[in-house]
Image 1: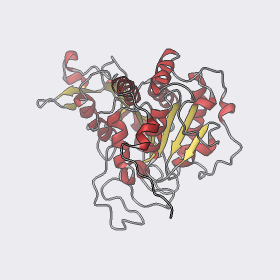
Image 2: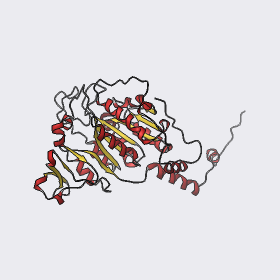
Image 3: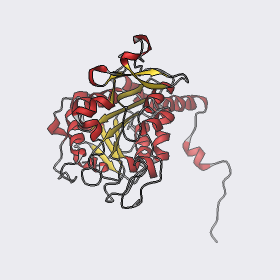
Image 4: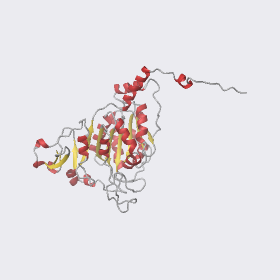
Length: 364
């Protein structure tokens, strides 16, 4: 890992950098292999941790983007997931608790030529970092946020987290948690995030596909990754991982395809009488009633309704891309605003610092 350069481009205004970035489809292209993204640092997660699978998936996937290592930056906060920058041979910053989205916002806004990634966890992102996360999402800063959700605090040895289910018995809730958990996908859609996806750590193919779409998206992308903590919350997502129950309770999302799932396509998603969505038996409804997934729908209400199908016990959990829409990015609008300000009110920095009223203090 190397430290990140937070400075502005050496020449030209931000608008020039944005224009160049758009013209060249982002950071400069190069050919990499997975081994080029590995570092000499010892990976210090617990043996069997789901983070290993995610790390390998990211290292194998990123070279396909054709982006040079020096044009990638990974910013993290605090937690097990936040050790990620140490293991990626790119620029990176292991920052402070919950503030990774804020730091990444400044970096993406000042250096739009870079590919900026945030790696965070359910505790880091949704407790102390909750405000920074939602503001990054609503601003639509061009960054990709990977939220590792293991439904527990792992680094601090097993306390309940903002995504732990009600009744969860942990070291900090010996009689069971009373808190209603966040649904990270619902939260992101409520903040009008332009790209929201969900994947499983052990589903290499599905994870890679969601990551690819997230990386290619212009704007803020949030990918919730269900990640097993085999020390403090082992088997948290076994219902979806088990070959038998996984097909029964997992709803695959593919744009333009009917929402049919379960053994033999026995179940499907239809609209209810109140504008929401519900689960039905496929042989009990007309084919025209089955919802066809539309990830590009402008109004987030549909994607939000999808996110509410799942319960705390993970039954009827949609997996894939919920929403992917195009809106102007924060840094592009900022560049346009700065260019306009330069034209409308040319300024002399020295004159501004000198001010209109000056005085001289004479020595005796």
